[in-house]
Image 1 (tube, one colour):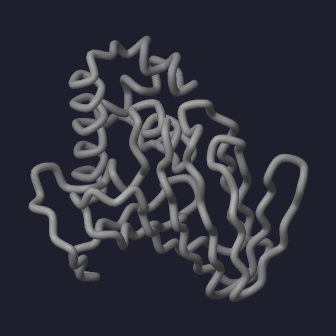
Image 2 (image 1 turned 90 degrees about the vertical axis):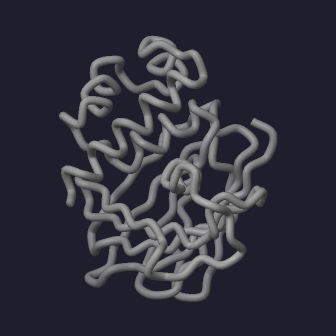
Image 3 (image 1 turned 120 degrees about the horizontal axis):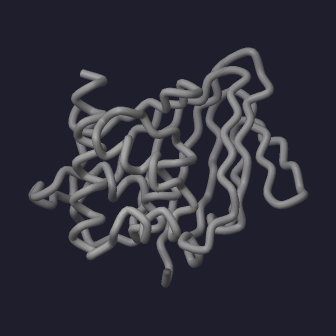
Length: 189
């Protein structure tokens, strides 16, 4: 199952890159990810981390939710839990569930995340994400969000708003998984 997902991710990146007329070098320059790594991912020889995949998606003009939406899937206003795309970051165990109905014309994506105790994911500043914003709404556990030089300590019920392009760090300093929702809005990018 994991190998099938790696192959699907690789095929999707290659297809999107080629549809946009981008070479591996073009995508590497736009995303800040090495040409060699993109090539390895496209061939399913490497599993992208959450940070790396987010940078590639932003360079392709997509959110992670758009990236994981099934190609050619008929749009429906209803997204049933059993049909929602789930992906696990191979590095941290971070698990994301795309909650939003795929294929709609909405500029908003909703993602349910389970973030393991002690996990740490860094999303560096990236111009390709300019215009995207997100709300991070914590349901359970603890979450430490670093945006620029400011560290925000979230407790259940807290919600933090931030631009995606500025870069940020997610950290779970607790002893239990953190569960939160990300509401991502795409602006002009």
